[in-house]
Figure (cartoon, rainbow, N blue to C red):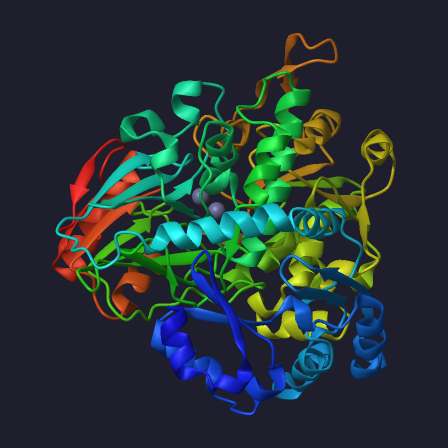
Length: 624
Ligand SMILES: [Zn+2]
Ligand SMILES: [Zn+2]
C-alpha cells in the first residue's frame, strides 16, 4: 500500500510512513505545503487504495504546542466560542471544542487547512453542548487519556483486516440470537467463510428472568475472541445493552456506530449498571467493561462506506427512530448479497427527526422491525396526538392536579419536550425532567446535524428547545416535595414502561390522588407494569418502603396517547417497504410480539409478492 501511495504522491511531499488505523489509511508526510499544492491529492489516494484516507504531518515537523496554540488563536475567529483546545501527540491531532464548529472549520474547510499548514497538527473539531454535560466531558476526556491504547488497537485491527483479502466468499448465513418474535435483546450474527459479525447486541431490561434477558451468545459456537466486529443500529439498551459483557468475557474487536449512538449508549449503559446495582440485581458487566468498550468504538456518519472484514462492508442510513439511529446496509462478498437491517424504524412525522431513508444501492434481503406490525396497530396522526396530550395536560392542570408521563430518557423525552415547549411555554406550567433526560438532551445539542432542520437551526442559534427555562431538572431529594406540593405541574421521568426508575417512584407518590393523571406516550412491553395499568389494572403489586410486597391502588386518571411513538405503525411499516428502492427479494420480520411479526410478514409477502416470514430466535437462514 505504501508503494501504491508513493506512486501517486509527488516526491517533494516527503512521505514518511503509511499506517492502517482500523478501516482507514493514514498517510504521514513531512512537507504539508507540497501536499496541499494539489487540491485533489487525498481523493486520488483514496480512489487508489479504496479506503478512507487521513493525512497527518510527521511528528518531527510539528510546531510545539504553546507556539501552535498562539497561531491557532489568530486563525480561529473570536465568535467561534472555543471552549477547549487539547493536543493529542499520539494521533498528531489537536482537539478543538467550540460552540460554533462551523467557524473553526471555515468556508470549505479553509480555517482547518490554515491550522494544518501553520502548525502541522491535524485539527479535530467537536461541538460543545449548549448546556454543560457531564457525560460528554467524561467521554471526551477518556478517549484522550486512552489515545495510546486506541492507537495500538486501531493499528492491529488494520493489519488484521488485510489478512485473507481477495479470497472468495461462497456462502453467507445469518443466525438470530435475540429479538426475534419478541421485543428486547436484539442480536443477529452474520457469517461468511472468514467473517463473524454481530449486528446489535441488546439486553431485555424488562424481565428478571436471565433466560429471556440476554441474547443466545453461546449458540454461536464461537469464542467471543473469534468475533470480528459488532455493528450497532442505535443506542437503546435492547440493541446495545449487552455489548460491555462481550468485553468482560474476551472480545476485543471494534464496535461500529454513529457518533451520537456511541455517546447515548455509554449514557444508557452506565445508568443501567447504576440502577441494577442499586436494586441489588447485579449487572452482568461492570464499569471497567463499559470503559474498555469506549476505547473500541469506531464511529461513522450516515453514508460513509466502511470495510469491516475483507468480505463485509457496511453503510449507515437514517432510521428516523432516535438521535443517531441507523438502518444498517451490509454489502457482503463483493456484490454477492446486500442486506438491510432496520433496527428500530420511524417512517413518519416526528418533531425531532426526518423519516427513515428508503433509497439503497442494492437490497436482496430486508430484516424489518414489527413492534406495531399487527393488523390493528394504527397510530393516530401526529398533530392529533399532540393536541390530545396538550388537552389532557390542560384538564389536569385546571383541577390543580399533576401529570406523570413515563418516558424513555432518550428519544421520547426529547420529542415530548419539543411539543411541550411549543404548546405550553407561554402558560408558566412547570415541567420537571427527571433521570438522564438532561444529559441525553445535551447530547442532542452536540449533534444537531442529525436532527430536523428547524431544531438544528435553533441549536445552532444557541436557542435549543431543551434549554427553555420551563424545564426544571429534578435532583433526587426534590422528588417528594414535587409530588406532595400543591403545585400543578408535569413530570417526565424514566423508565417509559414503569419497569423501574424514577417514574415508579413518582407513581407511588401520585397514584392515590384522582386529580392527577398518568399519561403513556410510548410502547409498553408485555409483562411490564406499564402494560398492566394501561390494560386496566387498578390494584398493582408494588414494593413498599420496607421493600415488602404490597399493593398500590391507582386512583389517578390513566390515559394513553400513542402517536408519539418512535416506531412506525403498521401503515408506516407497509409504506416504508412499498417505497424502498430497489425492492427486496426476501423479507424477514423481527422486534415484535409473535403474532405481530407473523402478521406483518404475511401482509408484506402479499403486498410485495416475495418470500416473507418471521424467524424465531436460534433460526439460521442461509442467504447465499
Ligand atoms: Zn429503539
Ligand atoms: Zn428496540
